[in-house]
Length: 456
Length: 64
Image 1 (tube, rainbow over the protein chains, first blue to last red):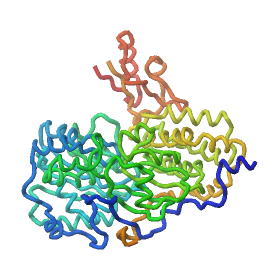
Image 2: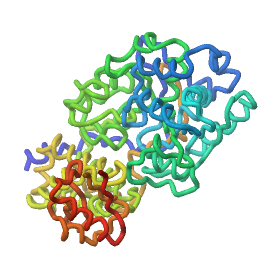
Image 3: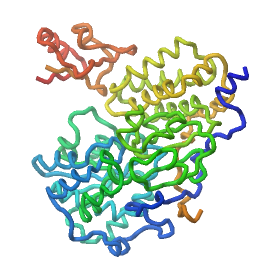
Image 4: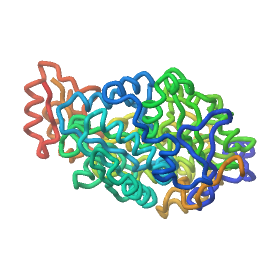
């Protein structure tokens, strides 16, 4: 019994704080780097004049095909979660017959991420500068900003007013209700076309048939925020930070069991543990990490040694995704964490694909049975089977995320999972609260505002 | 030829699996899917067309 309770953790370590409660979040950059995306929290929202004063909307810089080449040299990869090469995406739209459209995707579906909301609320003109440059490069006739966060929508609307006539093409704001799948590229396009913000089966992808069934570039707002600096300062400068395959900096959202939850700008390729410890302050003993928002699943504490880069984390069976990491304490049972997240996936699935509706529900029920100490070997084997067989079965990636989460729990925490087969876990006891189908406790609120990290 | 099942459209009626079980698999809830990239060997092409037209919700597409 003592061995078992040690395996599922002692009762002394507190679980990661409930992220739904608004607290003031820290804002800062890794020591020794000049931030490219973040500005001081004390500055508040950067308006048109402030952005211009910083050199924004510069008339110089690479345009057209030269900009696409610069993005290619810079190696910019999409920051929405898929890390797809930005230049390839732009070129696939530019090469097709017009009219063409561009969408700045700020519908941040990942509950543990806040960087897109922060960017649009605080640096809307940096995003719009990137959006206008990308629109010009693909010769788009209209550009859209797609969001659900009311604070982001208000900031973008003000930015449109501040731009007043300075934008060379039509700009439109399209809002939607918040939902995990609403930010998926086909869902965004469908909403802009007047439909529901729900994913469609692919192909066609938006670069083939998007807004008004025309070639459409859908780019994450952080991806676009990197475009002005690459256009003006060049690819070489951009590559001064980051790694060969993951160049530049990214916005890291850290929450959970850490001293300073918040938003940090970090060069890609830095070590996970040391970076999180320097910026956010890790507990002495970490229980694990929930990666990529919810999408990239769980990692055991040994992932401290991993690098914060796209390919390196993929090789770990995980991912950087949208750059959000939830730190788990020793008081967090990985099964309870998985239960919270799989419950969210089950609730948030679009109810469109049969395999997703039935598969997320089946995995959820099995994880909850495991948490209650009611699962046997056979049920665990079925769970393992679903974690493999349900991949690539949905129109969007939600089912992949759910299956990947389950697979990561079984792969990263085998001893803890086995310990649940025999007995109810004391740390999973509070799970009854999740079964009321509330918001996930890892869903990060931004309503507490931000403060500068070095002043905290 | 490549076969594809639209997961949004599929309602699990399953005639595709009766016509051509080698290509159209059913999961435990009866929803259809194809394995890998859905490549259909030449000897199955006619059966694949039969499965396509026989799907009551038109969830199957065949690409040359």
